[in-house]
Length: 117
Ligand SMILES: [Cu+2]
Image (cartoon, rainbow, N blue to C red; front, side):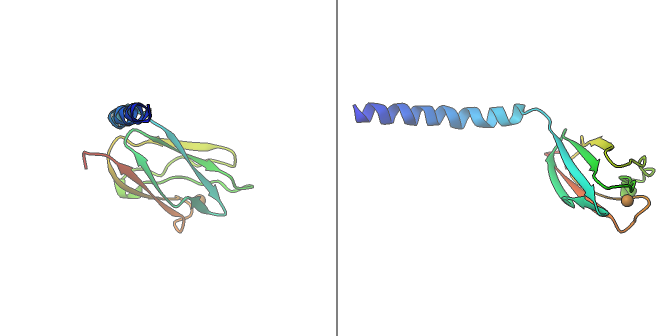
């Protein structure tokens, strides 16, 4: 009886081990938040999966900010005010440093996990 039970558990576990990686690969893209407060990106470094979106949320009282991927030779992002957000979806793997346009001392990096680096 005990052996039968153990067998069933092990069997389930095996299914679990097979199914989990499949589920992981089918996982929906996520939206991950970075808060901006007291002229800091929190967290300053963030690791996401390819296809995920980062949503920067301005939590200041009255200061606007931007998200500027200067190293990608892009233009400064639009300024956004307290309680406004800025979003970007990352379709390529790699590490992407950014800063705030008006406040060069504000820096952060998005690390994107993936296989096409
Ligand atoms: Cu700023």
